[in-house]
Amino acid sequence: MLHLFAALVAASTGILIFAGGLVTSTESGLSVPDWPNTYGYFMFFFPLEKMVGGIRFEHTHRLIASTVGFLILVLAAWLWRAEPRAWVRRLGYVALAAVITQGILGGITVLWYLPDPISIAHASLAQIVFCLTMTIALVTSGGWTRAYATRGAAPDDAVLQRVAMVTTGLIYLQIVVGATMRHTGAGLAIPDFPLMFGQLIPPHWDAKIAIHFAHRLGALLVSLAILATTGHVLYHHRSRPELRRPSMLLLILLAAQVTLGAMTVLSHKQFIINSLHVVTGASVLVTSLVLTLRAHRARFALPADPEGSALRTSLDMRRAGPFGPANPGPAGDHA
Image: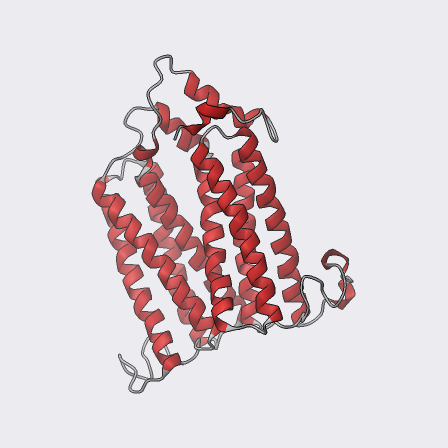
């Protein structure tokens, strides 16, 4: 049950990122000028008939954000009560702190009239919240925990570990550059694709053109890094479905993301396409993170259990139901 709930929270976070992309793409960030209320109403009591124009996008984003925040609160409490691994419990606490900070940044962006640094930080932190919830969903899954008790189930490939880590880092940096491009109005600073003003390199420069060019250059670097990572997996670990599946998904998402990026420019930032570009980029990030964590899974193994039962018992405690048994105490400090 805990894993299913964690997966629900991760999926809800992805929906929140899409909703945030809609707010930015439709320039609806100041459609509701007050916070935390909505035109003086308590958020959840705002009349549906008043949700028109940009208010519909901004208020819906707030409702989804509040729901995700509550779900992460429940998840953190559930982990505290039922998760035997201390580091997984800490992930829940960090996720809760991150989503609270995210909400505060969202309020500041409204009250301070969308300052670029705060808006960029708000968008960038959303990706970290997504990564945290996806990590919790992964490490509470049966496939992850069964690997502890299965000899040879966790690969220990140092090259893959390094390449996957670098790839995930590059993807996150690319997303930050993309957020900078969106919030500084540089999304159409270079209006054609794949060329740039009809040339391979822009013939003239300003700050917005430089940001847009950096995003395109970053897309090339990320693509090469993803091809290197997935190529290594498919050549050396094709018999391992836990590595092969995210690798194949990563390639599919990369193709979709490049296509959506081109369509965003060619459609002059059509808001649905632009928002899909945002959430697909987030999906690329968390897929690469899952692959990275699985590549490092051998490092999370617990000490051997001679009877083969104590580990399974402790990991199954969280499946006893919502908020399950109490925190097991010292034994919970295992990896």
